[in-house]
Length: 267
Image (cartoon, rainbow, N blue to C red; front, side, top):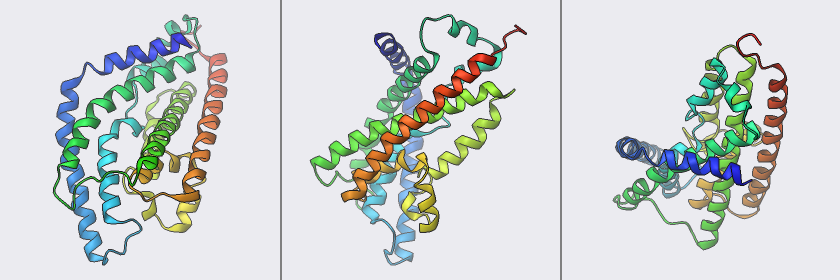
């Protein structure tokens, strides 16, 4: 376990070096977040505040999404891993006395955590300084905040295990671009990154809740904003744990199958 923690720490330290890139992205995220808040404000006024979420909850959801953008976006993939699979450098990884799946999992988690930490704090501070009604709110109570942290950790686990599936599937194709475009584009929409899931029609939302996508960023953000409470909240936590285990098992199975058929330089 210690060696995988070292992989996590190494990627975390590497990610913390790119501070200027995070500062540059900060401006984009603040402007985009404010534009979304303004758009939802127009929708709320046009509909007479007849929205599936309170406007204050929507604003908080939007700012959390912008602050933790890099943590849950599946398109924020590690291009080095795709390159290893495509050009044969995976052979060097196979020489290591470690599990490829666990090593890559630690690496991805460390990189995402480092980048998210650098972007999160300034975005959140700016969001709290915004004028009403575009100001980010505090969670309803301390328990909600603790549940937010727990589900945030679980949502990250689901996101990383899903990304691991994408990497493993690339062993069975000539180019990784197809899987990346189809899967990451679908997840971006179905996980609540474009619009919060309560805005989906109920008949489609029911089907979506059978997938792991509904338990990524959707759950922790709605808990923090006070939109997800009661028994439904705890059901979501159980489903988060289920999907982490299920996706991880599926990823390991795919890796075992890929390991048997890896061909490098014709050998």
